[in-house]
Image 1 (tube, one colour):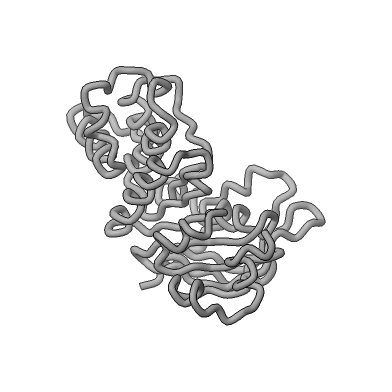
Image 2 (tube, rainbow, N blue to C red):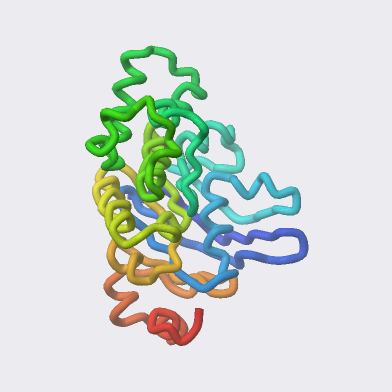
Length: 248
């Protein structure tokens, strides 16, 4: 099943064109890895999926982007961002307790039942594989957590509002290998319930977790295929050159 359908997408920031005629489908319960060098349009593509680009006054787009058949340009933006959550490159915990960090988004959507709120926070922490490490520290400041734990806390915060899609923008760029492995393990388990789009500069990470991989270059989608095919027999020489490190 197709979760998000993108047809002939063009993105502009002022006179600069960030994406050119991009068409692809994102499937339900897959991890789609997106790779490519800097300024290839990866993050612009990702931020378009929950309309974060709208915050830039110079942004404009044309083409079709549909979430389960609904045009995202016509959706209420708060509804869209509840359905399509995002985890950023740097963990950004709020200056609150661990519990309140996860509960924050749920409260923002008007959820007030205390016992159910507690259950949702616990479930989100379990899904982000952080619960066992912090279950006795819920009232401590989130800033006392390690960098890797803070990133998994941000994943839990995104999960707590029960999205359908989770966007990851280089979520392991500042993490050590052990923390990176924990985040990757979480992603692999989360795809059973969620659709995941991962932008990463780490081609090995894309190969480890992606069901399919898309290669972007200079704002164009060069190719998209099953991850093993992209990494063992890409159709385009530029994809192979990037994967083996000739540029990027």
